[in-house]
Length: 100
Length: 100
DNA sequence: AACACATATGAATTACACTTCATATGAATT
DNA sequence: AATTCATATGAAGTGTAATTCATATGTGTT
Image 1 (cartoon, rainbow over the protein chains, first blue to last red):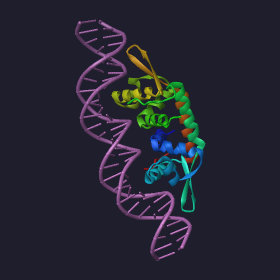
Image 2 (image 1 turned 60 degrees about the horizontal axis):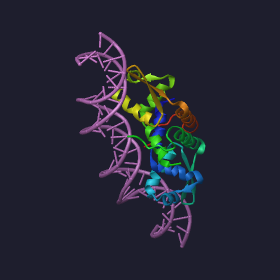
Image 3 (image 1 turned 135 degrees about the vertical axis):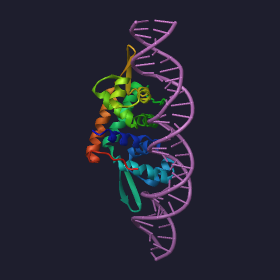
Image 4 (image 1 turned 60 degrees about the vertical axis):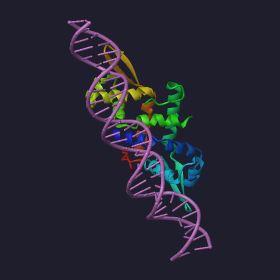
């Protein structure tokens, strides 16, 4: 497997807003405004973030009237978050601080 | 679970050199010079990369004479790479291009 | 203890992705 | 077709992590 694939994927996830969007979408699908309001983040920021997540097929989108409903592709990201949970609780005392 | 944990983890992996080191260590444990030579990457660069990977317990290290042998903590990273392989082949035609 | 080999570290620079903000597009309603 | 609501997009500015390079530290050998 091409190492660039991993790089693209991880780079896409290496951002707090995108993580928060993913966690937010875990409950249920939402339109852009809802995400923007719930996370208290400017709309264009959310749109940019969703755009790159969609690009890696981490989220998908469907139209509903003039809204765009985004929903999580849970196949990959949920088990991945679970792996990190387990990793952190096993190897990092449950919380990663970062170190640089 | 704290969203910062995910951010720290993904940020640490969002780098081509680190990915290559991880892939390189998948076969077997190696010292810094070996990695540096095999990947044709300057030693200090490798050391910096290893340092932050170790910080997240993605790699571990043991001393052997004056060498430091790094080895992969396969518990988390291997299944994670497998998830991405599967994701890419299912949703991205096996190769991620990136999109920004 | 001097030396050589192996690796780590610090700090300045560089590179790249995120943010910002103005504006464009698109869909529905009147 | 004009307006409004909803979202996307472009491009300049910003921020943060990677790179670079000089040097320090550590380990074994003579």
